[in-house]
Amino acid sequence: MEHIRNFLRGKGFVLALVACILAAAAVGVWAVRTIRNEMEQDLKNQQTEIIPGQETAPGIDEGMEMEEDTWQQETADAAKNVEGVPEEDAKSSPKPSSSSSGASSGSGTVLEPSELQTESPAASVSVKPAYTQPVSGQALAVFSGDDLVYNETLGDWRTHNGVDYACKESEEVLAPVCGTVEMVTTDGNWGPVVVLKDGEGRLWRLCGVDDPAVQEGDAVTTGDKLGQAGSIPCESVLKSHIHLEVLDGDKYLDPVSILKG
Image (spheres, rainbow, N blue to C red):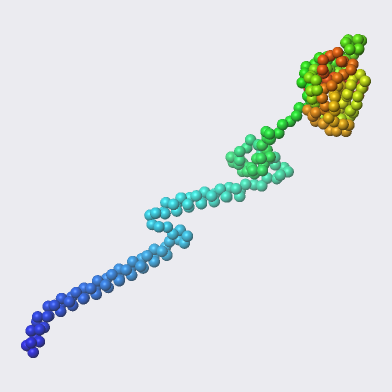
C-alpha cells in the first residue's frame, strides 16, 4: 500500500500536468471550431446580401462596376430619346438638307445613311456643255446675214450663211450640239455634209466633214465625233476649215451667237 502511495506521489504531478494539457488542447480545438463556424455563417450572410449578377471582388472591381452602371444608364437614356422621335410623313414632310450632319438639336430629326448619300453631290459626274465648236480653230469668215460678201473661190458677191472655223487637215470634227443625224450626203459645192437636228427642230449643217463616223438616224451628244476635216469646193482658196450653218425652218441663224449661248 505504501508502495502504491509512493508511486502516485512521484507520478501524480506528471499526470496532473498531462491532464491540464489535454484539457487546454480540448478547449483550443473547441474555440477554433467555434470561430470557424461563426466565420462561415458570416460569409454566407454576406453572400445572400449581394445582388445576383453584380458580384465583385472586394476593393478591386468596385470602380469598374460603377463605370459600367453609368455607361448602361446613358445608353438607356439615348434609347428613350430615339424612341420619342416622331415619325415623319414621307409625303408631307420635306427631307433634311444635305448640309445636315445628323440629328438636329432639339428637332428630333434623324438622317439615315442612305439619305445622306443620296443628298450629297456627285462630284465625279461631269456634265457636257450644251454647245461646242466643231473644231478648235478661230473663225475665218463669219455669218453675214443679208449683207453680200466677196467669195474669193467663186469670184462673186453673195451672202455667207454660216461661219468658217479653221482647223488642221484631217482634224476630228465634233458634234456642236445634241441631236439626231438627219442626213449624211455629198454636195457638189460643199463637199461631204453631215446634218444634225437638235431638240428645238433646228438643222445644223456641217460642210467639209470627210470619212463620216455617223449615219442617218444616229443619236449624238455634244462633242461626239462626226468625222474628220476634208475639203469644201466652193471655198477651196481658204485654208483648211469647216463650214457650219444653222437653219430654223427656212431662216439662217448666226451659229456663233448660238454657240456662245
